Length: 128
Image (tube, rainbow, N blue to C red):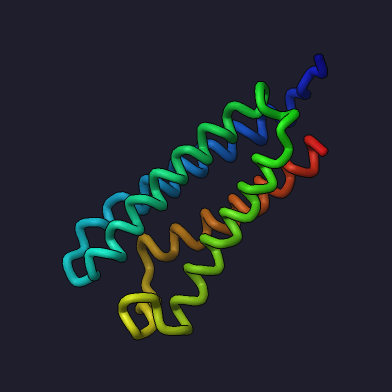
């Protein structure tokens, strides 16, 4: 059985922590009463998927042979990044208008999305 390097484990742990932080940023968005229920449920489901992604990041020492998982993580984080950025310019689904550009959760999510795209890409390159 192939051994996984310490740098891969380190990148996986950092990715897991960032993913959990991203999830913690999105769970409170369920409480925003001005958003439609569908959008609020989307935030909760996206946060749960982010927790699963974080666990997969941390389990890289066992799952590094399953490269497709980490390719899917790259796609997932790119989708989150694009959804966040595009809904600030184009009309958001179910709302019909662009979301306001704000500081707070949107800014934190934007920074975390960029970091998670980088970390997931680096991890995929390391395990390939």
